[in-house]
Length: 259
Image (cartoon, rainbow, N blue to C red; front, side):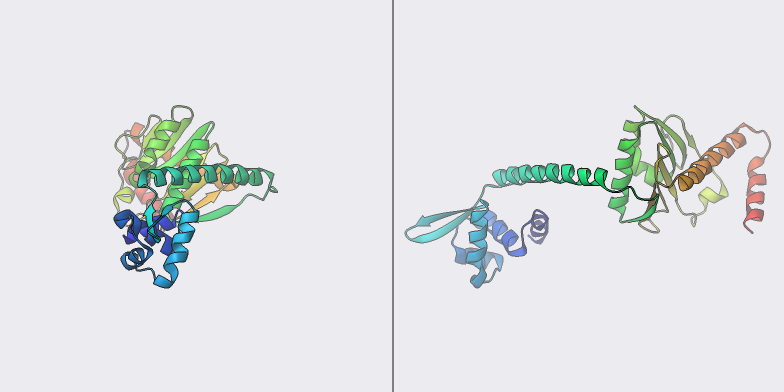
C-alpha cells in the first residue's frame, strides 16, 4: 500500500488523501469510520479528507438511511481522469515554459553540472532528438546501451559519428575502439562525450563511479572535445592500417608523457 500511496502523492494527493482513496478501492463503499480504521487516518481528520476528495470528484458520497457512505471513483475512470488532467497540465506548462525560455535574455556560454542518472540520460535523449545535422560520440558500452535506440533513430536523419569502447556492433560510421591495456584496466573510468551539431554537448565519467555529467554550449569546450574524439578515431584507424607494432609504441609514449 505504501508504494501506491507514494505514487499517488506524485499526482498531487497528500498523504491522507492517498491513503483514503486506496482504502476505498480495497473496501468501498463504506462509512467514514471504516475508512479511518482501514487507512489509519485519525477520525478527527477523516471527514475533512473525504470531503476534499468528494469535491475533487475522486470519491463518491451517498446518503443511506441518514448515514453517509463513501465509494471510490472506479479505478479505470480515475486513471483516465488523472491522465487527461496530467496531459492538459503538461501542455500548458510546456507552452508557457518554452515561451519564457525563448524570450529570456541570452546568457553567456556556460558549463552546467548535471546530477542523477535519470536526469543525465533524459538530457542526452533530448539533445539527440534535437540534432539537425550531426552527432559526435565517444562512449563505452554502458552509456551506448542506454542511448542506442535514440542514436539509431537519429541516424536515419542525421550523421552519427565517433567511437565506442566494448560495443560489438555500433551504428554504421561509428568506430570500434581497439583493445588496449588502457581499455582493459578495471580502474579506467568510462567517460562519455555526446555532441550535437557542434552547438551543445554533454560529457561525464562512468555512472558506476559518479552520477554526474556536464552540459555545455561553450564553443571552446565543444571544439576541444570533438577534436579529442577525432584524434581517438584517427589513431584507431592508423593502428588498424599499419603493419608496424604501433600499439606497443603508443603505450610506451603515453606512459612517458604522463609520467
